[in-house]
Length: 268
Image (cartoon, rainbow, N blue to C red):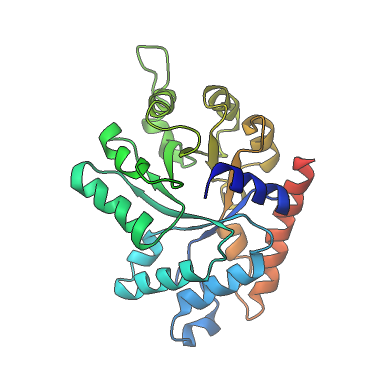
């Protein structure tokens, strides 16, 4: 999916919501555990309840690979079920060099045919470039993440006067354009979002951290908006685990609709 198509989806749905498909067997509604594939049945219900309210889905790969071959099958069925107009992100946080990097890229862009994959930049340019070689596919590079431990390295001050996350983002912008590269920027750092937007004016940000992690959607838009709404704001637990009864779909839709309506108001 190219940038213009993604913008069109955002405007058409008045939404820049990304729903995280972090399906955990230990958290699923009990009645689904009696089905042949509880993970897929759960994801299918989530997608049915939210597909008109979001523009993107983000399966977190760890939740599937932890289940071995059954998990990979559930992931494939889930990806096949997601409607074509949605921007699909494999949240895999890969990043390795040489043939290994090429195989990771082939896995997600050729076998699974997702639109984007999250990549860790710690090993440098040659761990990212293999993912950038695919047309109309995206690398979503970890920039400033939403977890507490982000302060351990990402906020370190360098001799240049920059913080490490700033150096990572500025350097990566030489590797890929805003038509193929996005950055993960956590909602739990609202005071730094504006600074990052000033650095990467035209780039999309994938923003985790609203909902269960306490980030504010209003602050994200206020500080992270570019000339366009080049934001994908992810919500996982707050939406997909809104309820664990047999009627969980209703609560899921209500929660997703609440976020979408707030986004619609912020879009103006």
